[in-house]
Image 1: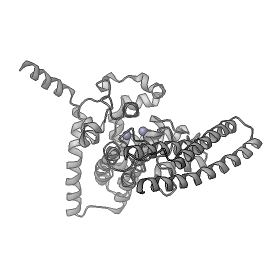
Image 2: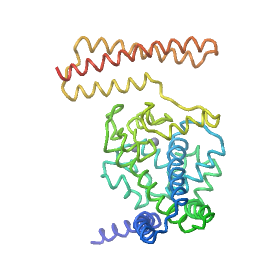
Image 3: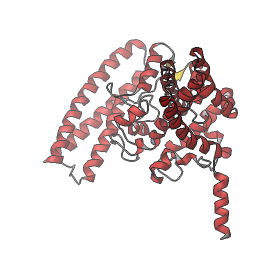
Image 4: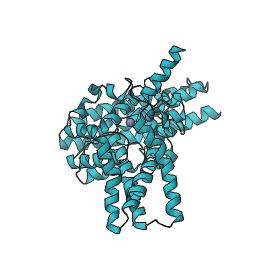
Length: 374
Ligand SMILES: [Zn+2]
Ligand SMILES: [Zn+2]
């Protein structure tokens, strides 16, 4: 009896009241605000446009800023762009960069294990939202965050400032700021409620879907080891983060979708910045490494289906394929340490080899299809 009472006390002590109140009340209030504004015809088109802008700016500040820049360091950018990420990222009401990156790095380090802060193994709703209801963090709570794990971020005074004054900063950037803009057309409260509150709920559930939907729905073309999945539907909800299987296999890559037709506006944004000279050192996983990962998945799939891989054709294709991957990797290393004039010749060689293995991939696919459906 005493033990269960202690457990309840501990559970109550662990409840994160501030976060709970916001996460539970904000959707309820948002539904009421939409109902009230519709029945009283209070919507102004300028405020709707502002809400769309704020949705895009805060959502993208999370994906290109909090996630791909601060958590994964997948490219470099100017200081003033960083400040924009901090400002609009704060308006998403998703904690400070230090806390977000801390949890996210743990998510990658311990995916699907007990130490994963939003493990899908604990169920859809846990990964989506309820992990936030109690004091979180792998080490058991916000106040016990091990800052060594984010030392690269913690040394930045602006990131420490955002952590310390997060609530005030968030109230300003999420509500007062859009309210001030909307007061230009006499709609302060529309700015606060529509472009602030309702918009923050939409951004929340978009981001939350990365931890829930993206670990449940879709395919796993690059790795079968983890629950993360690729799906264009979740990409639409998450500014391109839906190609989550690729992201878990290659977390340092600035892209989540690697095909030009796949929806990844976060990648397009970072790429556009680089063309304008505002971002650089964009990290891309070499193509042969991606194909190698795909090969491994094909092989594992065949094994799972009890399909014999020892057929002569497949074995010889595999051998040839890995030889090509080796050759390209060597050339790439040489390329990285060469002078400009030599780089062009090497680049040409790499392209030729890539064409060769692209043809191989077609052949591999054909052979696998034949093996599966024979
Ligand atoms: Zn994940
Ligand atoms: Zn990540």
